[in-house]
Image (cartoon, rainbow, N blue to C red; front, side, top):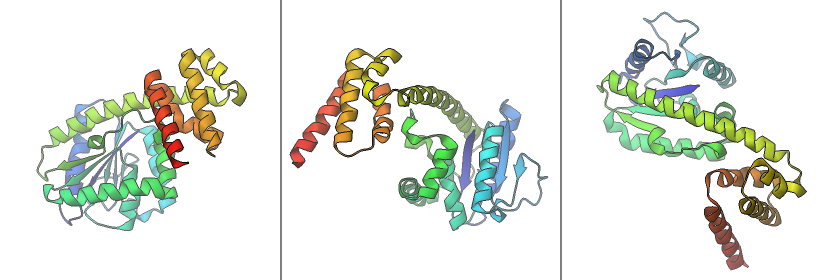
Length: 263
């Protein structure tokens, strides 16, 4: 369900040792089911279904299937990306829910890496589809906080501190996923409403009269600008759910004002 990555661009920086210690801590101190994936080879540990190594030998498609299957089976997966800079590693890093770049001296590198990851999510369809496939559409993410996406760790940072941080992140992520699931159920109901009866259908679902009417007007505006109806629904849905009538109205007014200025 929740994937945590450990990475460093510097060889022999202790990434594998650190990530294994966190994996062991989670198994010893929580009731969550934990698994471990190593991009490279584990020479001392006994591998099993929950402790996988030599991930680099799998094709990207095989890696995707493996991660997808394990995320369904385990609560937390620790991903040891190992101390190497390669195309294969960079392809998988965008899928993690929290990324630790090991070594305080790599802070600038980590910031650049995060920028690359965000860029990939926007423009690389293969990466974007992978993200959507595993985590659900980003449209429905309730909490988007960069502090929960990328973290910095001293190479000697206590395993307990990192373990506690990951566990706290997991709890937040779990709650978010439940909210996402509820939102997706509502969105599916909205998509089934006939286009010409959108306002009425929203009102019958429990949306306030004024807000339902405004949302329909907003969708009509987007369609008039050339946006596909279903795409307009998906893009505007988070504002319907998470914003008040006043906030939605203000956004609607700003958009109309912007369009007017362009003419």
